[in-house]
Length: 319
Image (cartoon, rainbow, N blue to C red; front, side, top):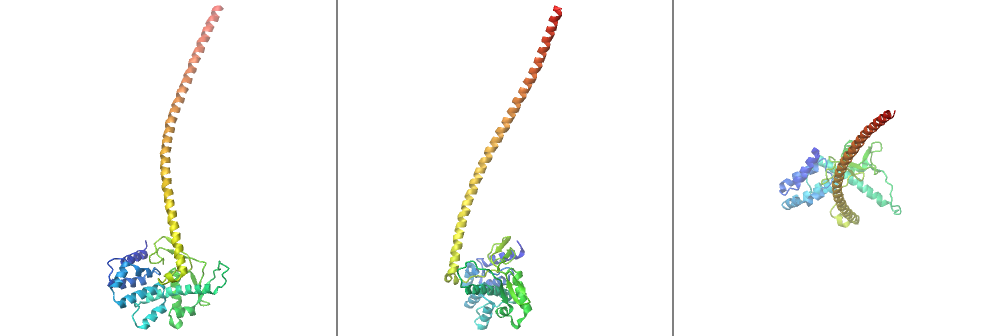
């Protein structure tokens, strides 16, 4: 386990600790917002019993600021942050430069998502179920306003986009000639245990994330309003049930095969023992036959010699 993964696990354990106090919640959240490998899974943190208890014992202003800031990192944009600051109602936590850059990176992901949704909405021909994947091109002029980068500082914008690419938030490249961010939808992110795999993602050796950019959190209000999300959740639950059923069947087959293998091993050991004992008996019987046949031949030779001697004596007497 790498140092980054270890620090992420420790941070999550501290957030889930039953002894979490309201005074420790905001410092832990600041560490969470600044973590270099956490880019989604922020909204489920609000559902942790320890976080709920800490929020319940916080003031109303702190409660609103914490919830709003977590939602910003979950599915919000940096413009939402600046609007909350200018409103003057203290409805958001104050972020440092590193956290603001992280929020800008997440905003780029939202822009890509919105662009895909807009392109799908423009496609009115529903007869073709298979849509041809096309390259997404986002001009710098669109990103400047969305990322709240004044004075059109190209170098500053490209630094943010390069961080998105290097941190595995998207598969793309910079076209400095046409001043565009180009994302190829036919490529997939490759995420390892030290990269951005979500807050509560398991630290596996290698995971392939479907899509050209990392997914962001889904607002809890959309879970019931969006029919596509309900359909997706139903499909995933059905897939999970079938997978668990298949896993149970495979485990039963594995146990049955292990039992059969055990009995087969016992039977073949007995067969090998019998073959070994039978082989020794066969060798002993063959040796006895060889000795008998060898001894009988010697006796027959002596008998023939004796008979020849007797015949020679008789012939001499006759002569």
